[in-house]
Image (cartoon, rainbow, N blue to C red; front, side, top):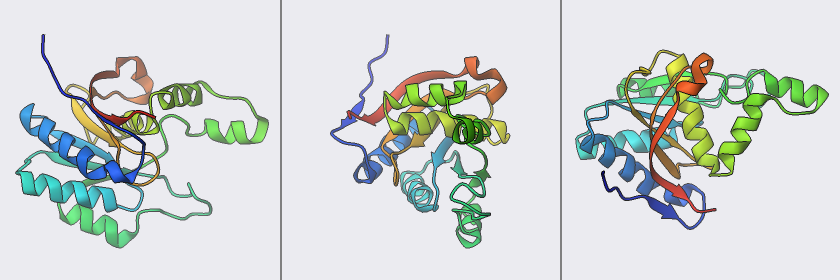
Length: 192
């Protein structure tokens, strides 16, 4: 048996970002976890994670997952080419892809109504927290892109809008092997 600390935030949101980054980097160093996977639409949270990792001497890899082109309309990309180049120059891998827990099914819901199985799964994870859903989703997106292996645990970070408020130690999977996903530890999350 092993005893671990879980940090619970009073409310979701970006005010929890620094503590979430701290929890993630600390646990990654303790457990020799080779990958940190972070959701970041503008790249700001990823930059902050990169700085925290550097300060703490974390030697693993950081994978940044961001929205697919057109998420906000048109062909718009949320992560600017300049910010992407900066993240990559810092040694981070950037994954831009479709949401694992909605993807094309969102188009069918918007056109015809109803819910798809991926959206039901996403909504179920949201009952825990939005950041929990996002952390699971970016781990799957990173695995699908070949940026993290599915044979070892990673730490995935997600949030509720901006910043990060949830960190999970988990074994990622590909979309086509969803039942292989294992959430091993909750490092931090909001209560509500």
